[in-house]
Image: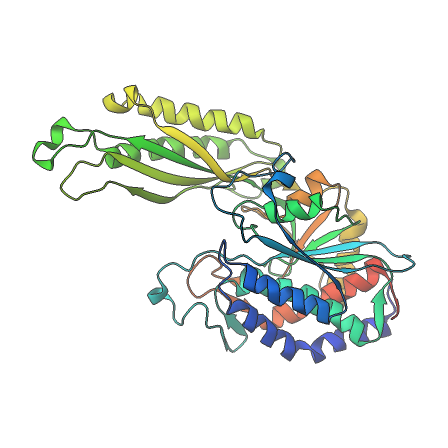
Length: 424
């Protein structure tokens, strides 16, 4: 149990540096670190880690280093400029327990910018909220980990165990950035990921699978449209069939998600097709994201999807002889339930209580995080705990500053409790 005087000093140190923390978070949010464009923001993180006294490892994610590993997801984009950054504190005489603080730098697209109240990459503060794409998911949390560490150093303290601060790419589409950190050898006795959890702990998360369905049609002039085969219109019965599969999966309850009526969501998230307005479209491709329960066999899920699409296609005379193609790219992610983590959860609960005066609440996620890599493939309990955010992946994304302050204080206390501290 941490001394209450030390806990108060740590909380005060975090609060004293919070204005600077907000400015840094805003500056980082202003960088559009979309997929393939993360490098400038990673350069900023590398400089910040170095300035905090951490040894910096900035390395390129090489597919050949990870494609053979459990948890790898196939990609259809270039990795020519794909960089991870790790800031390491290595205790000269480790006496505490080691820790990974992991966060992702990548953000999702903005959608039509005219639907935002203000430009998404011009962050601004209104009251308690910092607005901007990626501020909530999850640059505020990524920065909170750094400033929790900095607060301890500002008190003349240093962790009594090894600690690794990771800024990774690809959390929003594959998780291959976190996997590359494991491949590089980073290990610890606990991992904390400050995703926007509303100051709760994620106890379980679904798996996620991405795939594309590619259809072909028979193009003809619209004057004789009945003699052709419309690939776009043929896609809709297949989508309907996939939603029936979604309903069947949700009917099969999983104990970790017993409190949720509809934990597994299947979304047709993108569609394109056709070449000319006065021609019956000869092709159509639509993208799908689906959730799956922890413990699901990914191969079996893929077979169910393929059987579903094939059977639905049989009802279309053209598709029956020209079956759709299914291509898997992006997430092939297993679900994860936090287990064998009593000591880690107890330490986080103590830290959370010391800041909020309330017990740590737990929740289940209908999305995924990088926690699965630590828990499933490295034997490291992955604790997902971060600030309150709203409209992530939507318009006017925002993160609560008061919540971010509390989370930063809790992380700083967790470092001191879990790793121990000593004079720098």
